[in-house]
Picture 1 (cartoon, rainbow, N blue to C red):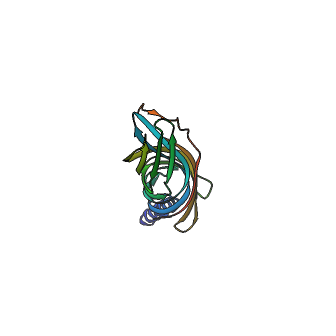
Picture 2 (cartoon, rainbow, N blue to C red; picture 1 turned 120 degrees about the vertical axis):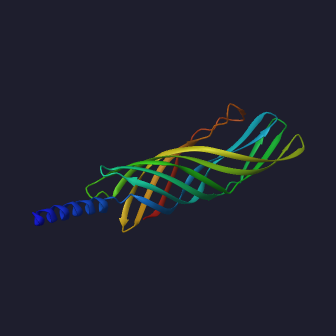
Picture 3 (cartoon, rainbow, N blue to C red; picture 1 turned 30 degrees about the vertical axis):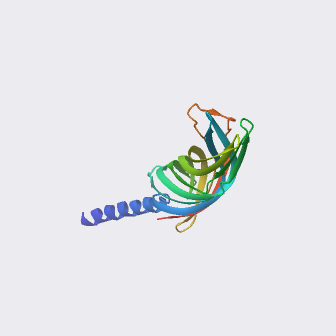
Length: 206
């Protein structure tokens, strides 16, 4: 009876270890990624939000925590700090008005939802939803009068991607998505459309 009990305990421990070994996407992680993101800045002049936009190269350092359930579902939260070239220009004929926007860093936070696929359980397909905050220093001239402002811009970004465990704790991931900005019903000089965003990154899973 004792031998049978020990055998059952050993089998259960082996199965638990195997399950834990298969959970390559559980726990804290840190990494770096780079790619193209949509950048939008705005300046309020005489009741009009004068926008400028472009897609720019962004480099991010990120970290987060996620939990992989035994059946394959993965839930996580992630934050990031990024750097980009946020020097934008815009001309608006009323006034006339010229605006220069200067930004260079951003903060992001959000959640991820993933699923493990493949016989070796080393590939995750996932979706993400995150809020990205950027600040721009603004210098402009309207009707010959200079003005100075600061714009705090938020964008909701969303998309999906794939992450692969390469070796040990090293993972590689790639994602594609888009974003949208909410101007609260204010009048704008144009209606910005969502642009495709893409990124690739490396991370260490602990």
